[in-house]
Image (cartoon, rainbow, N blue to C red):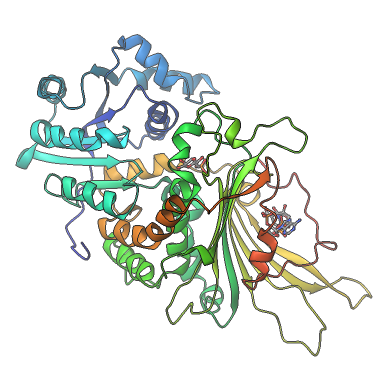
Length: 501
Ligand SMILES: NC(=O)C1=CN([C@@H]2O[C@H](COP(=O)(O)OP(=O)(O)OC[C@H]3O[C@@H](n4cnc5c(N)ncnc54)[C@H](OP(=O)(O)O)[C@@H]3O)[C@@H](O)[C@H]2O)C=CC1
Ligand SMILES: O=C1O[C@H](COP(=O)(O)O)[C@@H](O)[C@H](O)[C@H]1O
């Protein structure tokens, strides 16, 4: 729980990292490339060894080829680095619930540690939720170094399917691993722009002073993907977009946007404030939502969600949702927070759009509202849309912007991948960007009634929107009923290639 201030121990040397589920997609696409990224930046502890662990029998050379298939090595130096990195990696095959498999892993770890002075063990669980507890149990039984070292476990989402299952998982885990040892990863917390939200809010007085219900009309946090569930339709059917990205990634962004100033940058102070905010969020009901599912594209080239062979034809799975979140506290009473997320939409974009209230009339008839946009991806940027006089003899007002596009402003700076940044935090023992147990509980409390209602009430049918469209047709009305005013875009344009990488 909250506010314990245990000293943070950084792994600076002699570290063994074991990646469970090493034959899987996440390990190949994210975990190993992130470890390689840290290696190329010299950010792994000295004497680090990495062990891949999974059930599949894989020859070492094949394993090394497999994990390096997603490395980016555009220069000979990086190619050499990739060779040096894979030389640190070995592979152990075994079951996820058998003592002998874990004893075999232990002897491999101990053979590496013969040359070490300390035992620093980091276990990365890139495994499906069904084997999560067996692995955590076996690790505690056989590979926790006790008082002779430090162990940490990185856990991947999903952290449960609803409030009850999440609590069940936590009940199984809590006697084995302390909160200090657990790092629940939400990779959005490792994204550069997400990490910038608190510094941006609290270090700029002119931003901070107007961050409240007196000045802000509404806040939208949007996630758009231009592709459907291709290949994952069956898996997605039980999950839906709300569990997939909203209960976790977008809610974390909402916390950072909405929370009060933490008293320090200490992980517990930050997470205490997140929990306080979440406790002020009203649980969702059907009055607060739009649900959608993508159909075939208008030109017929892209399939509908239900065209996926692994999806039942009468599936009611939700691939788009807009949720109106209400925060009942002094700062935000009456300000709609709208979370929007969808697959198979017109573009790839994740952003926070803060729309300010109307300026006073009188001197002006009707002005577009100011907007502050925090673009999380692609092309990280922050821009403020504001009104200004058209230069020259005209007295006309136009919309213009103050623009901080990272790619233009910080040329040459490497922005780490989210997973790199989070694994490094874990190596350092810093929990600020990981999800705490009580955070999880309050977040499920907000979403569970709605999720159960959608699942149990067969009359709730998502609105079909065409693959590649902006959103379901009912979205503009939903937004305008929640005080969002779309400005006149005629006089405002932006060179489409600017800031694109
Ligand atoms: N630094 C940078 O990168 C900067 C980039 N720009 C770019 O300039 C362009 C304009 O910026 P901005 O005005 O912020 O963004 P947009 O005009 O793309 O979007 C403004 C808002 O209106 C919504 N919207 C877009 N099209 C419609 C529509 N047809 N009907 C109803 N609502 C709609 C958007 O939602 P939805 O997403 O659902 O379509 C969004 O919430 C964008 O391409 C932006 O990326 C501008 C300034 C700086
Ligand atoms: O967790 C998930 O996130 C990805 C989106 O992550 P991003 O870093 O590419 O924005 C999403 O595609 C996936 O469905 C979901 O499980």
